[in-house]
Image (cartoon, rainbow, N blue to C red; front, side):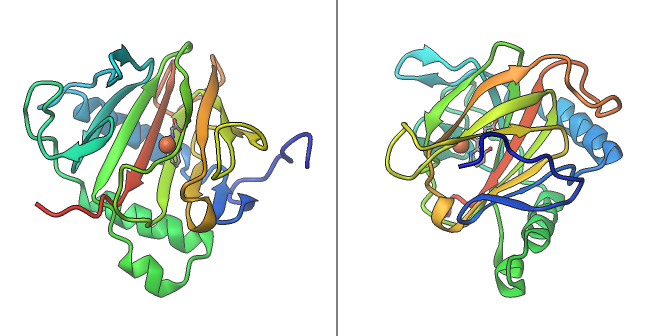
Length: 222
Ligand code: MD6
Ligand code: FE
């Protein structure tokens, strides 16, 4: 057990769990700002950003999806819980970015080339938003989940595969950081315990709050 996560330099890889790989400052400021611009386009529709309802309660995080629309606990092409519109297509550049992420994380080239994420959940957190401990298990594929963060820092709680409780490790995710959930960590419980206001990198494109993109492979076909 380490009491504090050691501070890593840009691009320096760490493995907080088996198959969980963190690469700080993987996106530079220009790339972060560009991603924020894309986020602003995605939120314009056809499906607006919204707080999904879990068992009748609105999440504090707001989400817009690409490729497939996520709602607890399923994926559909149309946002049947919002306005019924079909979600935006999954962009080709994001497939390429996902592959580059796996390559930089050290995945073998055959797995890199085979990686074809088809959905992205794009979350926006204001200063009070949280995300409870959960497993990402609405996908039929166990392909890695690639996570990118932009804006304010958060405390990301990375747990175990058995239950929501301890042991877990609290990590600081900062603007530009890449985090990959793969292998034995693919079904680890995780959550966001807090957002740290006014910590966003100058020039990242976001003044307040935090954006997190997770790209995933649904394993679904139309
Ligand atoms: C977030 N992310 O970081 C929420 N899931 O805001 C997730 O729930 C998540 O970052 C799987 C893998 C990486 C993640
Ligand atoms: Fe998740």
